[in-house]
Amino acid sequence: MILASQSPRRIELMREAGFDIDVRPADIDESAQAGESPFHLVERLARAKAAAVAAKAPAGEVVLAADTIVSIDGELLGKPRSEEDARVMLRRLSGRTHQVATGVCLMRAGAGVDGASSFVSVTDVSFYPLTDEQIARYVATGEPMDKAGAYGIQGVGGRMLVRKINGDFYNVVGLPIAEVVRRLHAWSTVA
Image 1 (cartoon, rainbow, N blue to C red):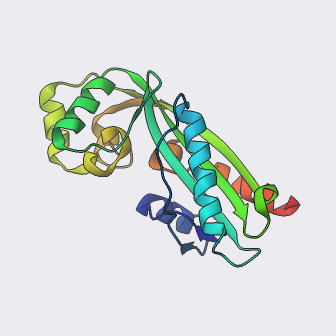
Image 2 (cartoon, rainbow, N blue to C red):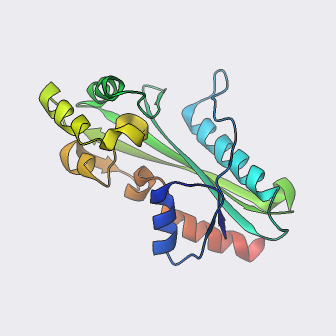
Image 3 (cartoon, rainbow, N blue to C red):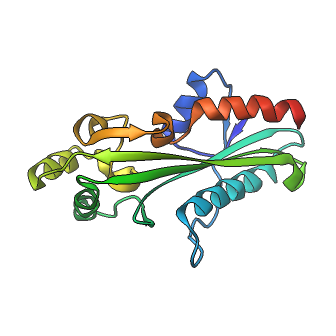
């Protein structure tokens, strides 16, 4: 199976689930389109990543692509560009509930659009109210700097910021692995 992602978290989840994967990240334009909802965006990007990698793969190879976003009030929160940007994001998430959405696409190389199946998994994440001191201490760990929404649930952020989640924990990590495995099995029996 080809994983169209270089995310260390996705690679680890796939390997822990017992998959022998070939990592081939996709190089696509990840810009949102005007008026595009966050949930439509992640599914479109997952499909585009899968298609880009499948186009270069041998026919019949299975490609898995995913894209994860954090949104609040319908607005995307990407990876912070600076420590100040991370502090601004975390202040915005403080004491509130936001959504983490992962779009996933399974595609069989050479099968075209008919050889694809995609879905979006959404998890609600609620943060504790955070003081500026708590935010500064978390940003100083460096963990927020390469993560959408400026936090990682699987690390210090999960222990320090997150009050509760409603949905799939692994979706917030970057790949709803249990659903992926189930859909992959169902998809491969009909594809």
